[in-house]
Length: 142
Image 1: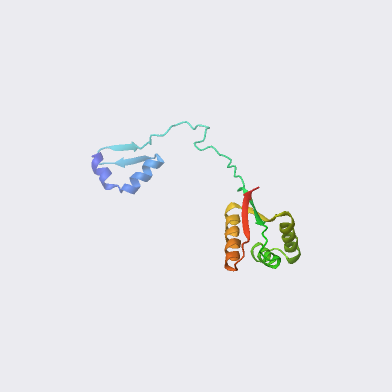
Image 2: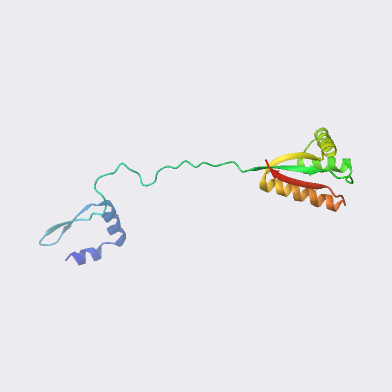
């Protein structure tokens, strides 16, 4: 008798009733039967949570200095042009950096994350090679 009743109910209704843990009254011609579906779940609520909040500590990416190195062949005007074009530096600041490169042998053009710094180094070196200048550009971690 129970098998016939379960076959008549749709599977989605069975699932909904099972999840809700409801009592389902059922009447036959001779008997009144009550079914109770209970999930295998703990009856007491526990105060502990399954997932504890974890604070994510995100460190900023390591920074790298992009530096131009002095050589005796690259014109000063070309160095100023490179600083303006690839580093977005104004004319006055570019001239100061160019003079620092000329007098001290090295000048810092900017400080960037690793990917950006390596891209700028490649761009400067490629641009210098295209214009047949031996200008060197390097990067080192701050």
